[in-house]
Image (cartoon, rainbow, N blue to C red; front, side, top):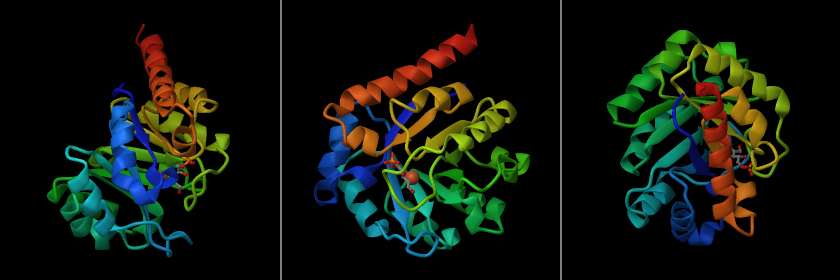
Length: 225
Ligand SMILES: O=C(CO)[C@H](O)[C@H](O)COP(=O)(O)O
Ligand SMILES: [Fe+2]
């Protein structure tokens, strides 16, 4: 199984000091930073776009920006996010009729391609062809649009189904994930863990990052034996 990666969602950070918040997370053990891009169309909220991501990538050298694109026209932003320094461009399957050409366009701009599914989209919507073309599969465990929501455990079987079909793929969970909900996610086979409020809201974010990572690693070690 691919290794455990923790990706704190900056949605729960202080946007006024965003680069400092990213540096604090990297110092605390985060490998990726999860950047929630919302356009007010795909979801009824607006967060940040390429101009802000560009400042972050300049201000935080070496950062891996895991861009979760909650946008209605994901084809439209590939160049801007690539120019801004995005490392992973994760679009919603619900937002496009042509996922394979979109994955190709993302790869042509030297970014990794991710495919996200919202709670009401079955995992089987991610066909073998789509999953094999993509680098990351993202299963949302809340409805996209806001941070701080309650974890939807009914989404977890989708992680297990995807893991059984794709043993070597990065499978990311996002929404309401923290020390209380990591066990089910890890046992189902997710290895990329997004957490916003659970990390930024903690007195000791470093400890939460370590707990999330060690939980995934313990499950992986058990499965390997
Ligand atoms: O995509 C998202 C919301 O649409 C966020 O990444 C997600 O909600 C993370 O925040 P939290 O851990 O607080 O739920
Ligand atoms: Fe997200």
